[in-house]
Length: 420
View (cartoon, rainbow, N blue to C red):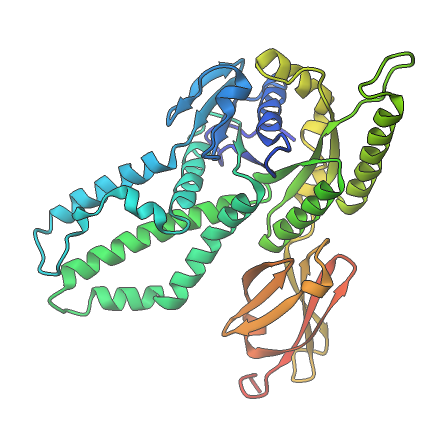
């Protein structure tokens, strides 16, 4: 894969996901080092509010501003609370231009810290900052150290959820009508609509970046154990449901093959048993990962802290460009949602099939629902609202089944609304 040309289309984005303790931040830093060694200009950005990049890199990382941390690599820890305060102060300043209002407590009386209780506010701001940085044209690749898996998946699903619900609760044509209704509250309504549209524009930009399969990919860091296998299955299933592209799974902290005659901790039997268990888990992870590339990272004798150690880890994990930029086919793999006429000629006897690629979803957890022009699809404890293609909005669901790695939902025309 060629590096993105700065200023044209924006940087490539690699979102590094993994549960706590899997070595997500270390692999994120090693990925940045490998990309820089391959000639890319890289930004390593942390969205994990526990921020451990400084510890892994062995040097301070800019909080809210990028600093050079290695050859070809800048790094930044994104402080979402600071972003919230910055946006909030700007909003209060604009509100003040409208003068005082007789509606009780003033908005400005609230502190920005009080807004952190609103679910998703900081997540959206952090992702919005990634969009801004990726679009600057200063870097070829932005590597993002995400929060732990559950928090990251929730954050990545948030932009589409917010946009969808706002459009259903207060669609754009109603917002325009309210803004031009001629009431005495015109100024305040117009301001509210303008601010909401601004939020929706930013949210749409985040969604567009996350689902742009030519630019953005998820890289999953996991461990070679049964818990790691289960976690990997859930992440790959959730990513597929959300329409995200996963380009690689990195199995971290594998015990290396012991050299002949080399002593091993706890005795050879213990070491061999542990390593055999890891290799079995690695085999199962490869089998479960469908077409996604699986990379192996050996457990290092010393904790890989500092740029030199990370560079060594990077060379071990990403031994060539095929490993660094896995599987060109995954860039152009199955479109997440496909619709086709399965039988008939567009009349009332026709059958339409909607296919969703859900390679690891547990069929026993599958749920389906219909809300107006949306299909609600749930699997493995997660749910997504999928806007139906226009032809399917005039249809009713006939049934659903799994066909290999695809969920197939079949629709038939609704006689009450189908054009005769």
